[in-house]
Image 1 (cartoon, rainbow, N blue to C red):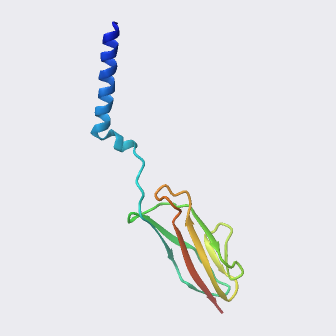
Image 2 (image 1 turned 45 degrees about the vertical axis):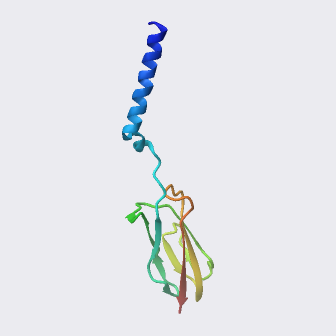
Image 3 (image 1 turned 60 degrees about the horizontal axis):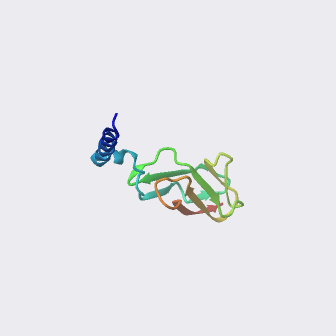
Length: 124
């Protein structure tokens, strides 16, 4: 093959590649854009001393549910509101008020970790 043919073939290959990308193929490989993420605590905010209640939080991105989100949940006062080992339930341990901090971990949907702070009260 003559050098001029090799250059021509390379130019055609590059041009074809650019045309394919221009036709939308790049959209397939583009990272998803940032989306509005909403965390919502679902449950009672007034608990009775001694109760163990399920912890339910819904996560939506751009209005659509996020299946199986990884959440980090902490209590501001574990003497008042504790969490079970699996972090799937709340334990009302003592009278008072505590805040749950719920953070979405490993989110590729936003540039910061979406966080919700939910205040809960325990009564006798």
